[in-house]
Image (cartoon, rainbow, N blue to C red; front, side):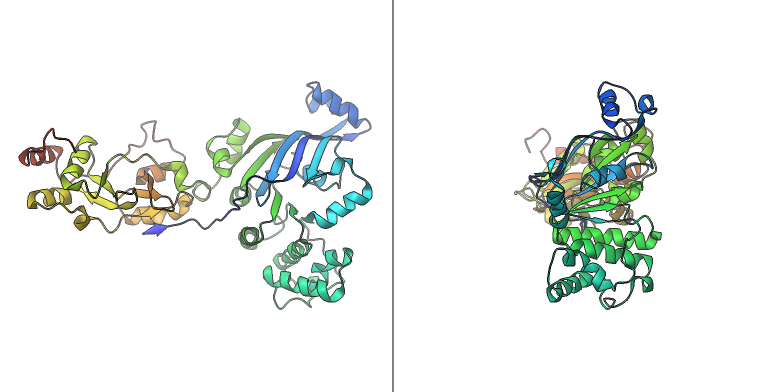
Amino acid sequence: MVCTGERVTNSNTAAIAVKANHIYKAFGRRPQEIVKMLKAGKSRAEISSLGVAAVIDASFEVKKGEIFVVMGLSGSGKSTLIRMLNGLWDATSGTVTVGDTDITDVSAADLREVRRKSVSMVFQHFALLPHRTVIDNVAYGLEIQGMGKEERLAKAQTVIDLVGLAGWADNMPSELSGGMQQRVGLGRALAADTDVLLMDEAFSALDPLIRREMQEQLIELQAALSKTIIFITHDLNEAMFLGDRIAVMRDGRIVQIGTPEEILTDPANDYVAQFVQDVDRARVLTAASVMEPVRAVVTTTGGPRAALRIMRDFQTSVAFVLHRDGSFVGVVRDRDVLGLVKAGETDLLKIILGDAVSVRPDTPLVDLVEPSVESALSIAVVDDKRRLLGVIPRVTLLAAIGNVSTQTGSLPVIEPRSTISMSDIADTLRDTALEGSEL
């Protein structure tokens, strides 16, 4: 049995789509003085009499084809930050680069060109034109770009079908549900065919079920279209589900940037740790993040006697069997191996267990629960060539989901119980004149 994760991410990790370099945004009568004081070490509270420091010394790079999530509570500065990424608000200090263009140092005309061709935005409250049909809303950006009516309507119809609104092109926004209206907003941004898509709390106004559908569709669209998406949210589970990487903000500062797994398993400080303590770990952590080294391993050419020796040395009742090329074959039990030895048989393939489960490293833990319950064997983690990377005992899976360390002694690591004693194995090895020989 093989389980695989469904999430597909873009493999392009070299090119940078958006870069923020030490950007600040201060509101007040003397914003430059606020920034100067912050750079001198003053806190946000200490400059409050002069104004508000919304974003403080934020630096990050967003790679092409990635979903980069900015997460934080209300007032953390995340919405201010995204508005600086398309020039809606000027940075008080620092630079923002979109592609090859520094948008903090361009003319108003050039900035409009960047917004038309490089960056589009999806808002929380849809921002649809109520007097225009669905197709005219989706085509609006193309109309602004000067595209002819026939061409823009044809392109808009393609996008409407892509976002799941086939058959609704001629309806008015008031005739659509909230989820459908947000699909129109997403379609309008996609129709503009910009490289970068900014989404500010885009799904937070939707009902939970519709919100999940939109999240799943966004991942599917990103995988198909390879857009660069910067997504703002205050919802941790949404951030963990969507993000290839996440930036956590607090009081205007970015306090940690990392993958969902890195943030969940290695929080930078107590604030992040407290923030992630209630996350659904089973949907974030993957097989690779919890797997353990393989102990008892034997090749098919090693034979049953080698398998018995290895199981005796590692005090375990099962061994993982590999082909000579390192690919995973399956699992054998001690009692079955012992039977082969006593019968004078040498072919381990005769006793390979058929219920051994193998999964890919990126498989979410939530997808491992059912196969783990159905099989008493540890789950094997294999790569795309079926090379064995590690194993996940059931107790390790449960501990990871429950956020319990297996190193504290609170949960012992238990292998399947042996049906024969280690002395039986030693006796068999001795009887077959293999005690002390090389394997």
